[in-house]
Length: 156
Length: 419
Image (cartoon, each protein chain N blue to C red):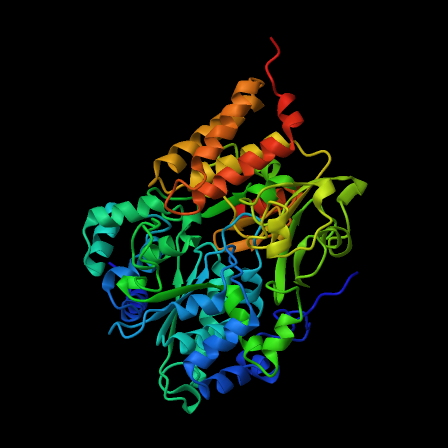
């Protein structure tokens, strides 16, 4: 199921651990990337086979960690931090603003599938708050105006 | 602006530094590793002990002592795992090291591996730290290409591999035994201790788990005259510089490298440039969201492990969250209780239930339904989590609750129901 390039990465990962199961979480990340940001049962079964663990074990792991998703996110996944330092300097308001702008609540995806929002617990950018992650990129000290601009630009 | 003491940030504060292996070597990098390869491992552990360094992840446990606990002669491999899960709210110092000077940290990790006889070190980085993960992987590739990792680095005869491992989003994985379960490919559940990781850690083998900043201190400590210099940066039992993540309502939030005899007041008013918009200070959460809160009149204190402990709080991961006079303390506590309710792994009843109940009680206050009885109940729920769980998350959730209730009771009264 993995493309050739990614399969090479999977094989490299497996060679870095004493036991195949140890590579489970990094391989799940690769699987999620291959499947447009979420893990279907087919993919979980495939990773379970690679790591030689039962599917139920993989499901247990996937549901424990917040970064693994069981449904597709938007093309741009906006992860807005509202944890303690961010909420002190406008993170909560930034999340509300984003929800209003896109007319969806956190945890949901816009009808056109372009944007999804996730409310985050601490993302470790506390001295540069309020901070967000768009897909894999951090943006720091974000104002509502900057958020609007970013969304408008990404939409085009 | 007051000056920093640059040990860990000596390269990062140099605007011309490009974090490449060549630049790191030019700054004196890998000299300590070379020296260490000429020492016996137990001599390295001894020097680390003498430096007095205490772990920078939050608990402040002496690193040299931790390494000396590693089980020997077990016939199993030993492991060193760098804890780069940095997820205590307020803390963003390790990411600076990994992003902007990964080789200093990696050299420290390599020194640690040699000291405890580990031939394969792992770096457990939190999954959201995409930029840090890229930076570390690029740095590790450079080290392999240069021959500093792999077979026989620097002609030492000591084979060494390092693997960057990504987590997937779970605060609890910063707890060392949960981190090890996660590294093994499981849900991150804290383990029953003993046995401690030094006896049975990664895949049941002797393991030491050390914070990124702790390891990044090693090239300095093992450098020329490093032990004495390191000790000179702070009072006895609090040696070295520390990276302070300053956030909240200050004019200049940021990560600062400071001596351990720095006054907390100076961190807020000199380094942080005071409270923004000319407001007054109301309080500080001094060492990550789990540390007991301090009021404005308590901040004239040295910012280190022991002086803060004497004040009934803790330095933790040195994450200071400053809040001004306009802050609604009950709302702030609500956000903290939400965090712990979300992050409890669910194994121990007091924490699984207590984090949930405490969040509900604080929400009750915010809905205008507070009362004396509920305030007492909130405090009691906090008390029932203290020391009753397998790991420190129960304590971490309880300390803010009990300290907020104790230090700011009048703020809760504003939310009492008017009958």
